[in-house]
Image (tube, rainbow, N blue to C red):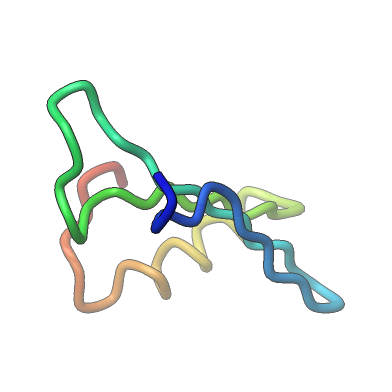
Length: 62
């Protein structure tokens, strides 16, 4: 775990974005091992952020 980021936090005046490395029981799968958390104030804000973050990607939990 020495090369992993166990916990990270980015802040600005409106948002807090936290993330941590996740390793499943089957082992590390590079490129699919980060779990982000974005703190939002409303469901509308959640949906807007999700739409922006998922653009160009694969939505697995819409």
